[in-house]
Image 1 (cartoon, rainbow, N blue to C red):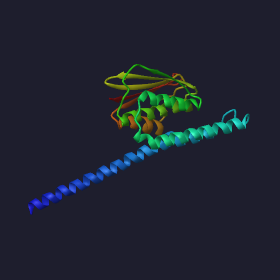
Image 2 (image 1 turned 180 degrees about the horizontal axis):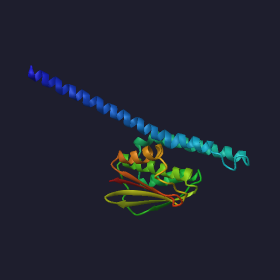
Image 3 (image 1 turned 135 degrees about the horizontal axis):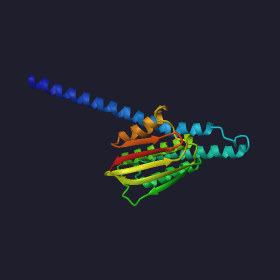
Image 4 (image 1 turned 180 degrees about the vertical axis):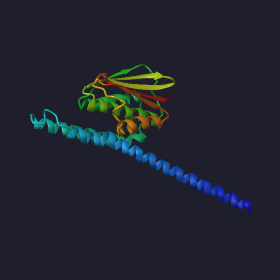
Amino acid sequence: MEILIAVLAVGAAGVAAYLIGLWRGRVAERAELNRYIHDNVLQALEAMAMRTPSDSVDAEAKLTEFRNLARAQAIALRRGFDELAVGGRLTEDLAAVATDLAREGLRAQLVMAEIDDQLPEARRKAVRDATKEALRNTLKHAQTTQVTVRVEERDGGIAVTTRDHGVGFDMAQRPRGFGINESIIARLSQVGGYADIVSRPGGGTRVTLWVPR
């Protein structure tokens, strides 16, 4: 009887552990989906809705811009569908991100040392997507179209630093939104890394992302 009770207890614990793992997996998947929607779909819609001086000057050029933005988002979605089956290098990913944002007017200068930039898929993806969010924030809020992206080895891992000389912001007064909390900080934390964000009014913004190898 005692053996039977022990077996049932172990079985119940196993089922509970499985259900907890399943729940955590679904929570993680939902968080990743929320980040993807924020970083891609919502950003594209906001860019389309943003008023610019050219709106009333050249309607045909504006329509072409909308079409290019929609086409870029379609490419990004297809890339996402195929991502699990395709590997890559971090530097190649960052170059692709810079190329995508160049279509929206951001000039990102990539400074890459001669390093081994191979990372596990989850870490590489986290750094790439967090870098993209940091660059989009520069484009949206910094009032500058130029930013430097530096990739280097540091403390047994790889660090990616984005630096702009835009208007900056007061970190004590401006609350961190979804983009910073979830698309940058939480994304790096989930893969064992961290994000350090430094900004001040008139002094631009620096975002440092680090992940272990």
